[in-house]
Length: 409
Image 1: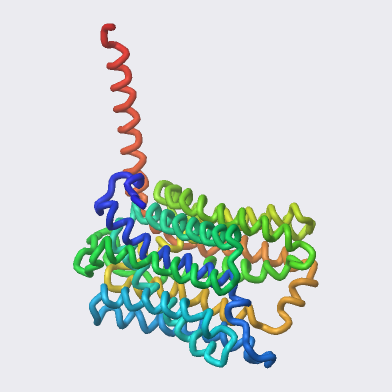
Image 2: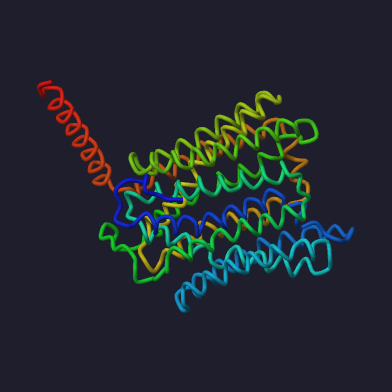
């Protein structure tokens, strides 16, 4: 993978590639695990309580380790720290077929959680450290495109070759090892960080305004699954989910370029509107077609959000504080995943509430308010500078074409 298509940059495409691979391998692994979370963390016992323990341990220790990792990464050799984090993920995943459905599964759930959270804020911070604000969303969007491109390839391989769950798990371990390629491309030295003077200090206040729609978006997305009766629309969900992954990959890339040209706020608002409208549509009529349309629109919206929220913590922070910003962006959704999904009776409530989709849609539209109240993280000067460069380039092309046409034949 080469990121040279991103255009002029103050960092080599090799280092951009390394930063993208470091995060995308882990994110692809996580979404594959999340896709099969019910089967992966199933209990060996008929005890209902144990059915909740494994996923709670997974998400809980992911949260704890993400926080702890922000302190550890600054005190140890960063390359060794990242290698340990990736290797732990590969090893703990590879052990799943052996210990799944045994009494050792809670312990393995802890290891899997540690392998997710420990180095994730640090790996994401490297994307910000290796980019300037006007190119950060493009690299973030490319990271999301690679992430879901990898997810799609893994799912297709598993289905074409008819892998059972245990073989699929080994494939997920291979996906996780993709992050090791990043260590072969870059030393990930802390000293090699782009210095920016546009933001003199980290901005926690504005981060709060951006976190609100992020959390609402995730919460609504989680609850929305309970609106669709899988036993009735399982085939439509399967088709829609495949389209959804493709849309996330495509629009993750598109939104990165869009946000570096027009700013982060318009991209976030587009994502909220697209998902809000799709919820309203799903609430009015529930058919196979409406389910597929909703999941497709959901993919577009998630593509916008994933790319932008991989860039925003870097925009609002300075080197040295970025791990904490990325930890907040990652920890809060993991808390939601580890709690809301397992609230008894929630599925029944949402499934039989005819107005629930309209409520979710309203929540998304209200989430636009905090975005409008906060500042744009891409400086206006950078937006004008990019437009000026594009204008000068077009003028140069017109002049060159005119001179070429005036030459005697």
